[in-house]
Image (cartoon, rainbow, N blue to C red; front, top):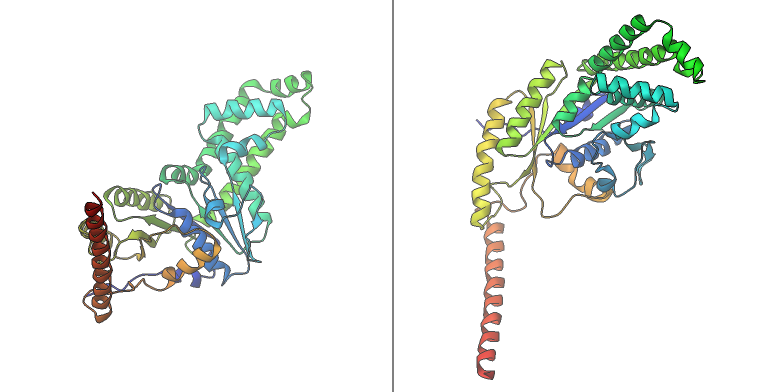
Length: 355
């Protein structure tokens, strides 16, 4: 029995969705997929924000427009915004006070990832004050994504560490801050309030992340062993974090029906098919969407819009093996090759006569 081809129509139809994560191994096309998904959502939702949390920001390249950490309207849209967040840089913006800055760096040395968690909390606070109907995350490669999902725990640890310091040193922190003229911003109460505020935001959002009506994770991969392995790791971790995932995009597929003559491509098709079969076997309850390998990059709004049709309608090769159209195409290709070969032969003959 043939398995019906999956699409991402289910995401467009789920009106309660607030957060959509797009993730997977590096180099599988996550940015292209999250950009197209945000374009499709903009056609059915009031306002959409796509955020890149990948330090190697590619959103600007995908849309061919410069984005910063401030949400910017995407050219050609009135309801699609994009922003690029770099956690490492963002943490510098969290602190304007030298004393507080040194405390944050002390804290981040004690608890790895607390600076990223704090910057993520700040970003979520900003995003929540703006009224977007859905937010799409173009995440960094898998390892970073899993760290991002651990942020609530990281902030909990940060708060516990701070409380232990507070209990050990009592009012010394406040006295020292006054002595060095650092003002109230560096007082233990101010810092405690700040950390707790961030923890509250992250806990609130974390609760939404675990609600399948509000959050889903789209796994992007390619039909190769390492990508299959990484996808399995990601799916397992998402289940551990209780985050819904029921969509897989298999990108860069060379379709068997395509009229392919190259031995190399035929070998790739065979290899890819082996892994595609494994994806269907492992994830039989997922929507699996297969996207074709294209001869050119998908960049710019028009190009993204053209490619978006394959997200909602299963891809069909232009020419199918064994059809009259395919035979006509092959005949015209062979004629062209024959003509080129004859011209090349003529050139060689003329060259010999001159000698």
